[in-house]
Image 1: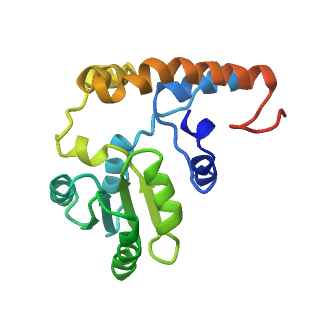
Image 2: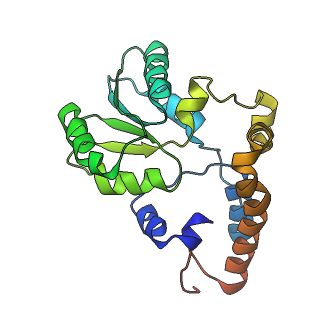
Image 3: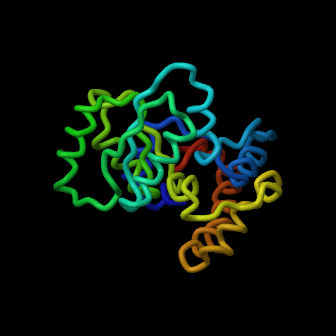
Amino acid sequence: NIAMENSGFEKALDEFLILSDGVGVDIAAWLLHGKIFKANLNGTDFVPALLRMHAGKLKIGLIGARREVVDAAVASFAASFPRHDFRVISDGYFKPEDELAIKQKTADFRPDIVLVAMGVPRQEQFVTRVLTEDVCTLPIAVGALFDIYTGTVPRAPEWMRKTRTEWIYRLWKEPRRLWRRYIMGNPLFILRVLRCRLTGASRTGGEPS
């Protein structure tokens, strides 16, 4: 939905490998291609699984969230995955003129992975603008991962995750912030997917195929 209204964000997404996250993309995949994804690769589950399964030692930088949250996230990740080296590069409350210093700090650390938690579309545009291949190997935009992993924002019960209704729990917990995304955004997303199916458009804003 954001990409339909923000051409800069749509262009930034061209630089990303986009993973399947949420029941909405499964509905879209079924409507457009007749099948759903094999796994829900949301960042809250995917990133810890990646850190757990990687046998070697990684250097991992964190950017985003409030300072106390990103500090707590580093401590939590370090306790869960002690073989990796975690470091706070910056919280998410910085000015545009601070980006050069953040890029230099990242380059000095030269991390294998940088986790960026600043919300859509800011985090993706920051990644494409600042976290270029000369300063880190793999930047990952992770949304609310730091808040959820540290318990700052509670996560839905296991049964809601398995039934793909975690979005309902998030809406219940943060209605003022999320009502527009889910109450208005979900139907709009489905309508746009149906339009793609009817017109044969293969991508956001693309020409009919």
